Length: 143
Image (tube, rainbow, N blue to C red):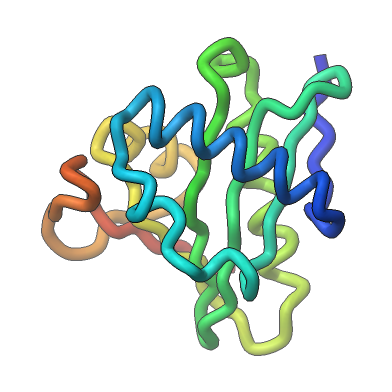
């Protein structure tokens, strides 16, 4: 199985990204819809991961020089453990590296995912906090 990651440039691709987020965050993790749909999607870069042609992973990037913010990273339960998340993040970091003025990647990791991001070179920053009722910790890495 190979995850193919593309930038979501069409309305259909963006709809897939939002549907994946709905399934993972709103339905699985009980995140309030208003917390997920925060009004920032129209100006963000969205990446969509397809496994054998089926959308299974997504994230969004916001460019906030000097850093890029990685947000809304989601992988469907049936695709977890396949390397889809790591491939999606590798594509995100490559996309951020291509942006002038972006030297660092930042994200807010759910505490359950801190180890995953640590293996990708991210380091914890600051104290734990609640986001949508879920414990998080900010993490950063140089690009």
